Image (tube, rainbow over all chains, first blue to last red; front, top):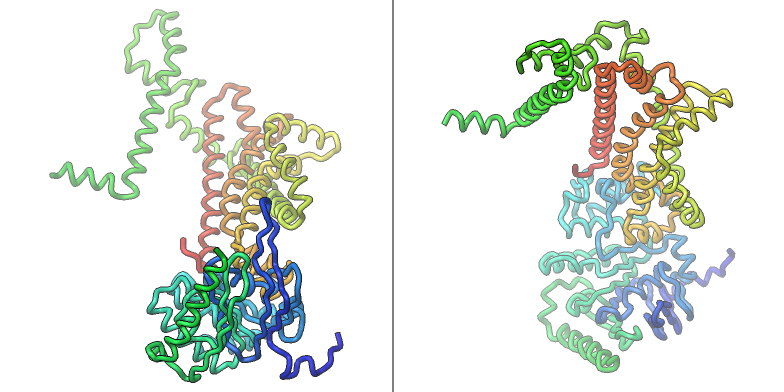
Length: 269
Length: 298
């Protein structure tokens, strides 16, 4: 398909969602999972979707990934339809669980998307080395998933999502199942990765500190019907570390998010 | 103290319990041989007015020509006679008959496994097949194999197909079922999250099959193969029973019962079960090798 070269230019957003609705038809009554979603994500943004469980944040991420089809409204990803973007492997998806294939060793798990993208054996080897070192797991190539801790497995899954160089990383509560200490460390690591790779990241979470610490833009959502309550921009230095969580600015943004969530809650009930 | 140590030695190891169990079975067997053969012997004693003692009854019942239940040493003698002392090409050799049965059961096993995998792939990938095939497959297994085996042999025989093929087909008939059931479950075993992962790479159906569904189904396949390979031997033997097959353990069972030679029947039975157990063990070894290769915990 011939496309004007400007469509992939800097003026087009990484993600552009307009008047998007998604209703699940169930046997009893329709569930309005997403209602009138409007969202623009610029290339290089780190966007967090935050809200109570059942607010549709994961569903919204899945719509962006074309794993779920919207009922109405429009969505473009990298200037293309979400479907075309998926076919072009425009994003790497990190799930709530590491989703590693148990019969493949770590290196071979990272090779999975590369095999399907037609990389040669030597390129696969080179890329898995590169991305394993990026998530500090050099030396674990030949180990199997069950031999690694939960945090290490999730790092492998991040390396796998990055390995084929998509422009975008979609993450669905990737650290939700991990303990607080591991989670803090991985948050710092993710921030460093984002800075190094310049990817656009969409990150689903229900932790306020996590959202505020990582994001350039926080999208606050409410439940039933799932809709966007507020979009909060943050402006922390790029080379921040966990210490900023004690700063006034951090607490102020956290307060804003908390109020947004509260407002959504009173609206919903 | 000594007795206690001896006891724990017997119970603790792997050999101890096996030896105890086998000894117990053999003792019960000898007792059973006396019990089952005695009525015939006692009749004979009384007819000939012979004074008999229990020790005489026991020794006689363990050395009858045509006992109801032959004693273990008689079966062992029969096994030695028909395995060790005969040329393996002789039609009186159990090795010869085992080879006949084994070759048709292996052909049947391979065909059944292939058919089973083919059907399961169809059922998992084609919704129409899922709804139409499964009831027929289940129905096929409700028909007693003893009823259908002679018909297959006779019908194929009238078409000029004799020998190995009809027997292998009956093994196939028994084998494909556990493979279909196991493989359908196995191919559907990957979690939704892994299917989503493959979709996020816009993987084709073929890629999802080879990289996700097939490897995930292997543990299920091996569980099915263990059942199938034992059934394949049963199928081959059942197929040899009707229409007077020329060779095979089934033909051997038939001629044993025809001539009332129970030790011959038992020797064939024991050979058949040793063959089945060996085959199941081989599949188990293959399963372990594959698991090792795939890095899975055993």
